Image (cartoon, rainbow, N blue to C red; front, side, top):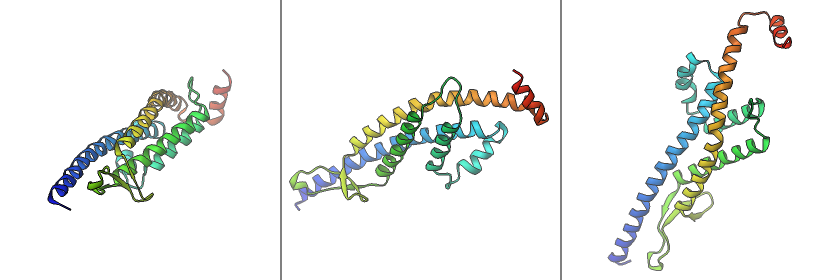
Amino acid sequence: MSNKLKKIAFEKFKDENTKRTFIIGEIMSDFIIIETALNEIITTLYVKEYMKRPFGIHFISDEQFSFALRKNIVIQTLRFISLPNQNIPEKEINKLEDELNKLCRLRNLIAHSKIYVCDIEMQEKVGLFDSKKGEIFDIEKKYQEFNLLFNSAMAKLNPILHVIRDLSKKMEKMYKKYDGMPRKDIIRDLTDK
């Protein structure tokens, strides 16, 4: 390969790496937003206010508390609870779960792929190499796919977050009202209305 072609190859590699670095940064930032929304749903429903910080530090931040675990807790919670005035059909829960799974796969694909430089003389495109499939892919197309999924998932998660916060406040009031009361009195109070 001539020096001129080597220089062209290096410039293409450098341009692709700059683009890849920017896209990876964007995807990682957006993925953190998704994880934060899932964390918020989990802690709002399952952790008392004074325990949220220690729970976040000692459990949610632990490397074993994976995205898959967060997603599963939230999806199972949505299937279990009936959200007031916002019953989420099973089909929508399944769609959210599918979108979250795809977001995770795309994040991993883009974050862990290698830059691929092919024969410059043939003017083939520089791309990213997916070692699992043995294929070269266009990072910009994957980035667009990620953005569509991200926007769709956040459009579902934001209203859920608001409903969960309201539900949590109602549950907290109920806990305070019935704290220390004998079970039979709680049942009578709830059924007399």
